[in-house]
Structures are given as C-alpha cells and as structure tokens.
Length: 552
Image (cartoon, rainbow, N blue to C red; front, side):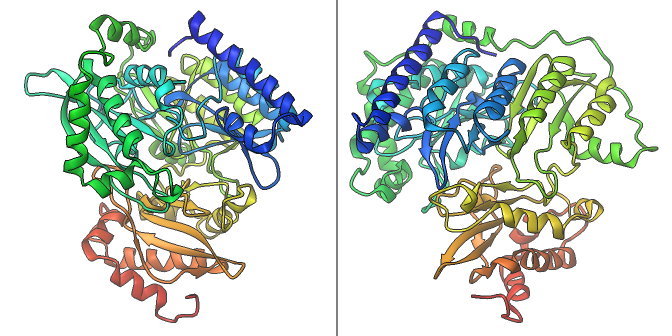
C-alpha cells in the first residue's frame, strides 16, 4: 500500500495543528458556528442528533493492521467502543467529544491516516473495487490510479469549494464492484485493440434525491491524460454547476440539464484548451506509484480441495464468505459485519484488534473495507482457511451470509443521523429476525437489500435488488419499497412498488416479494433481480397490496 513521504506527513500534521487551533477558538467563543462549520466539515466532523460524528478516510478501502489497531484504539478511547464502516469505504465514529477530535486526528496522523475531505463540497474519498489486485477478472490493479487521484485531489485549491460534494470511483473489472455508474465520475480501466491500457470515463451519476445513472463521456482516454481530463470535468462543473439550490447542485443535475452530448463537448473543449498546462502522467510517475502496490511475497502453492463435507457450517462459510483468488493456493475471505441482530457495518474495538492480528498472521498485514459494509482479508492461504474461520466464528464475524438477503446495506438512520426521517438499524434487526434461517437464504440465492433512512441515500437503496427508504408521514416512520435496482454493470435504479408500508410491515412485505420470486423464477440459477427484470414490477405489486392492510 502507499506509504507517506515527508511531504504527506508534514501536510497531515500541519492540518491537525490548524484544526486544534480552530477548535480551541470555537470552544472559547472567538469563532462563530457559521465560521467553524466549513472548517470542521473539511476535517470530517459533522454534528449529528446526539453528538459529533467523525468520518475517517480509508482511501480505496485499504488498511494496514497498524491502522486498524489505531481505529480500535480510537473507538475504545474516544467513542463507545465501536466504529461504523460505510458504503464509501470509510469508518465513522458516532460519539466523540468535540474537544477531543484534534487528539483523534493526531492519533490518526501517527499511522498515516486523516479525515480530510470526508465531508464538505469537495472531492471526497476515492473509492475502488475492494478486490483490487487480487480479483481474477480485473485487467490491471486500479489502486495506483486511485492513489494518483487521491494525491491530486487532496487540498486542490481550485476544487476546494465546489457547488456540491464530488465522488470518484475507479474500477478495472467488468463486474464493477466499485459502483462506478452511480458516482459523479466513474473511471474504468480498459485496453484498446492493441492492448494499450487507458480509461473509459463516465460522468453525472449519483443517488440521493434525484438518482441518475452516469453517462459515458469518453470511450478512450490515454493514461497520461487522466488528471488533465478530470480537471476539465471539474472546471466545467465548477463553472456551470448550480450554487443557488442545494438539491440541484450535483454534477448529475448539470449533465442532465445540458445533455450528455453538450456536457461532453464542454469538457472536451476545456481539455483541449488546457493542453499546455494541465498535469500529465509520465511513465516514470506511473511506475513509481505501481511500486507501492506490488504483489506481496506469495508462496508457490497448489490449489487445494477444501474438505467441508463433515462440517456443514464451515462448508457454508467457505461457499458464501470466500472467493477465488488470482494466485493459486490463496483465497479471498469476507469478514461479515452482518451478524443477525447486530447493526450492519459496526465493528467493536475488540473485533478490530483481533482482525488486525488475523491480518498479520494470514494476510500480509492488510485488511480492506468494502462498499457493502464488510471487511476483507484478501490473501489467505487455502491451508489456513479453517483456522481463520474458527477465529472469525469466535469473534462473531463468520456469519455465512455474504451475498444473501441479510448481507444488507444499512445507514445509521434515525438512531444517529440528524437528516434521517426514519430508523434503519431497527428495520435491519426486524429483517434479521424474520429471515434467520440460513438454509432458506441459500435457497433464495444472490439477493441485495439496501436501506436508507432518508432521501440522501447513504444506504444506496435506489440500487438494491430490494431497496428500502425511510419516510416521515405525520411524525410516523413508514418505508417505501423499490425492486429491480443494481450497482453492478449495467447499473439500474429500482422501481417503487407502491405506497409506503408501515414500520411493522417491512419484513412482511419482503416475504411477499420473495413468495412471488420463488413461485415465478425459472430454475434455481435465476436471481431475484433477473426475475424482476423478466416479469416487471406488477406481479410483485399485486402480491404486496392485495389485502391493502399494510398500505399507507
């Protein structure tokens, strides 16, 4: 992984000192709330319902064991003993004291971490495929390009006060585990007909109040022009993006208003005009960055037959929570943060410390955060899988449910967030309680539930196979249900099935949707999403609302 040099470390240290001074002045009354707000936002600090919330950057989801131990230390020392991993491959702390946040940032700086640009109208954490570098289906490791973009974007003076927040995802897999089509900009690695590596660029994607799938604006971009083209996109956005209406300020609104063709024309014109001064990536720069992401010292190991016949629990975990590695003799292991009854995405300090030890023992000291609020040990020798499973089982992190209905995305909702209209965690527990039979979940096959407590869509409900959106109706919590969404290419937005359902009826509604699926699917290989795409929404709508008892 990338390691800070003296410039990186100095920048982060000085930012901590600046924020310590700013916080002290705010607490002393010499900075007003209006003056302090943009300063704290640039350092990842929100004010939530009950306490400040600090969002810590995990660039493209990569963590060393040392960094994970520090995150555990922060959870135990400054919070309530846990952290919440998010869909942007970050971690959030929901209970820090404002006066202690500079100390937290200083601790983070000591392990080459920070919270810079995890909030505010700037370029946010750069995200990537959480299997980057180990996935058999990628054309090249995308992480060097993520790091190049991260360094370029951090404290970039021209793009520090954009019309609205800006999110970039990078992927090198056709399966698109980075959800690049629903980002402000999606960068996809590709090769031309001669095998030369370059990029395909999408722009104008996003979820929230106005969900939109991104548009292809450049079919082929040479590697050297990556930053120059991103600058051109951001300049056009900075120039024409709306600042008079927060709900119409995202780049997706600009692309829709101009039309993809006109937006592309503006970007290409800016790109051409900046040719004399825009940054260009040399092969030496690219090679230097690739050097930070060289493969670890893999052993030369044969692939092994995994004997789980005598142990159904291990066999299920192997099937659902591990994936094929591009190196023989190794396996990718998902660490499930979705134990039934627990808040999805949460990990305790004790769990994080134990995972750091597991990473040191079995995965070259590295851990990854995923878009689906799980963690990954990416390089586990196949011979060690049973030992890893046993230790994860003791930690409550081996629920064999990755890719199943209960591997759901869930934002903090009304439990913490000041923007939420309804709870999410309680609904997740309701679903866990109803669908606690793993054998039944396995029969249903691959199924993604994604849930948000408000229209900001932090839980990505628009792109869930089943999406759940919390809404407020006269002070009551209700839930709008969508089906047919997907983050994987080709991405799709879910369709609302009908009126919102009452809080106590959410699990019942999902059960009715599944009844239609089980009855109508064509063979066990047809996923819920495939059945919805084949049949449309109507059969599902009819089953949910046939009695009208749960409709608003």
